[in-house]
Length: 283
Image (cartoon, rainbow, N blue to C red; front, side, top):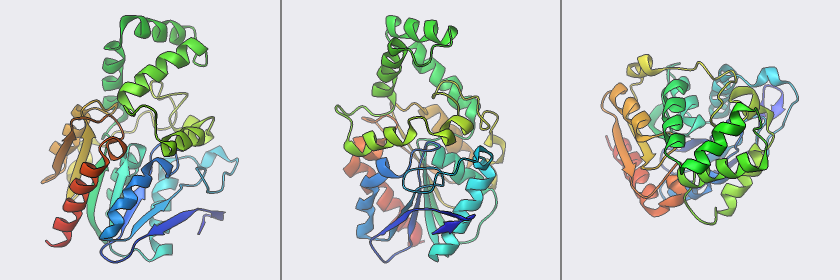
């Protein structure tokens, strides 16, 4: 489809029910790692798309495009282009930040909202991630601190230490699923990620660094499910902040998962989300 003069890739799976529109993470990850959510298409249409600059969509060179407001507008454009007048939204990680920001525009027709492994502020995410870093084995943590202080974020030893963090708090499966590896390729050197986030998960110095919507969560009225993994890099404390802020929202903790419960506990994740969407539709 065309968005702001560029081409955005999308895929529709299944039919019937209230469609589920999936907002992927990153920024810049593309939809690949969320492919297991196709399992929800037994009861409804599931719609994936790669945000501009990501995956199979166009990748313009203009870094001024990579701002929250443009991606919020993109959600609205995608809905209109695909005729999604009534829709559920599922935002995972950065997609959750995007979903929160979109919901604060008070869009019509959002029947249910799933906020997966996300937070309501960058500040809390960074604070929690620092605590997880400090809990790594001492030699790993010391390696990270040493290379961060020297600005050596691409040093091989630093990358090994970061991989240890990711294996504990991003995806605990060994080996990582092929879809997750494709997502890693999407993010490698992606200017969307570097412009909005920064060089890695621990240095959020891009234009998202001051994003904070904790004090506005009460404006979100749609029925909301918050999901999080026990070992998530965007921790259960972040999920609890959202659950407290959105009146009547539900919180589900996945005990065997980190940041990708839909990959790590796929069957249970699909059951929980599917049940929630069905309950919302049935009033």
